[in-house]
Image 1: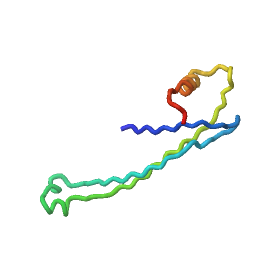
Image 2: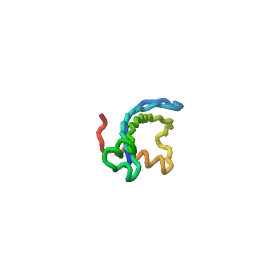
Image 3: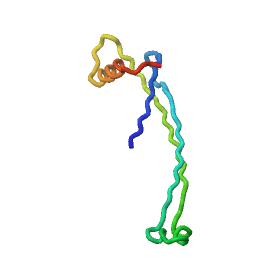
Length: 97
């Protein structure tokens, strides 16, 4: 499974600004894992008591978006990668909120 998280931002920075933190997201996940010894864990009553284990796993995931700014001057030609980015975000059909 691929998780996609997205952030849209408009910010004003000066030429020479090196780093801007756009946002962050914390997510907490709790899962319960059951393990057993094959065959022995399936024995009624004793299998559950002696040959199975249950553990709870707590996981905290933090996503922080950090950007290094590069100021592009109007009228100067862009390389192919920069032009793709400009086209992608200037032609984005989603409304700005």
